[in-house]
Image 1 (cartoon, rainbow, N blue to C red):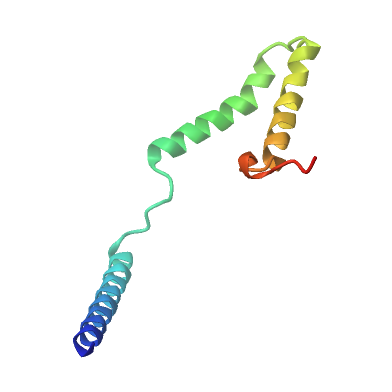
Image 2 (cartoon, rainbow, N blue to C red):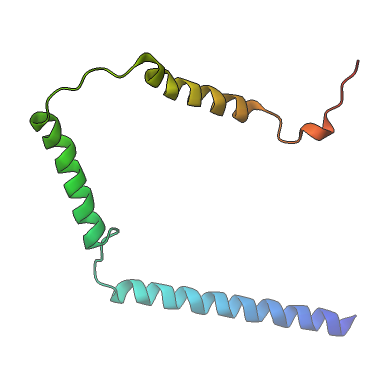
Length: 99
């Protein structure tokens, strides 16, 4: 029993030492890293081009006729299906009927 207690205490000390070492490494690496941005240059360029196309294309392209009514109802149908799935019980096999 005493051997088990000593072994668990040693494991806790090793884990705390490793944790403190990783914290010290993380803090020093944050100081040495230059101010890098969250997005890469390529993804930032892609987002700028997408934003520019969303702003400029409606000014250039001619207006389009409205879509058919069934196509307008498609997002409402998708929303209804997602709403039913959200409130459906996750395990139907456990529910029994009391009739």
